[in-house]
Image 1 (cartoon, one colour):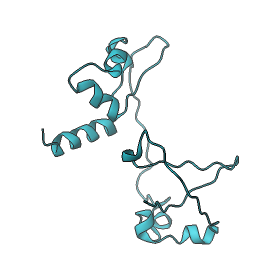
Image 2 (cartoon, helix red, strand yellow):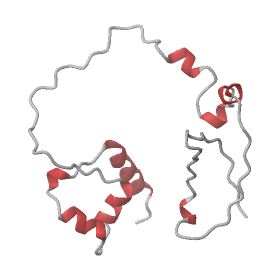
Image 3 (cartoon, one colour):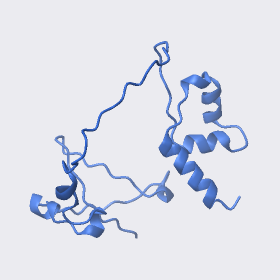
Image 4 (tube, one colour):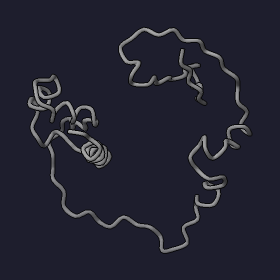
Length: 136
């Protein structure tokens, strides 16, 4: 038996979302749920290891910019696109697309114009990292 220990927020409908480790995908599992309410003070005092941020980080940085006001420069002319959907595939979809063989992802990609499919910087970084770490 494996266990997961985490803090989660219960939404207004009483729902908590639980994401399981990928190796548990497509199988039945038995769950035992034990919960304890957390007071706001306990949440604010989470140890650095639990949050990844040093104590007081947000208090020191939020609104702390002292330089010139940050502004977004004019972006110039931009391409007019017909109204339609733009697809932003995640890393797994791109991996399925570039791997050899047929896949439903390849069929979906081929059913659209290249201009309908976008590629974000986070996915690019994940793919580069994966390629760098890959034994292939």
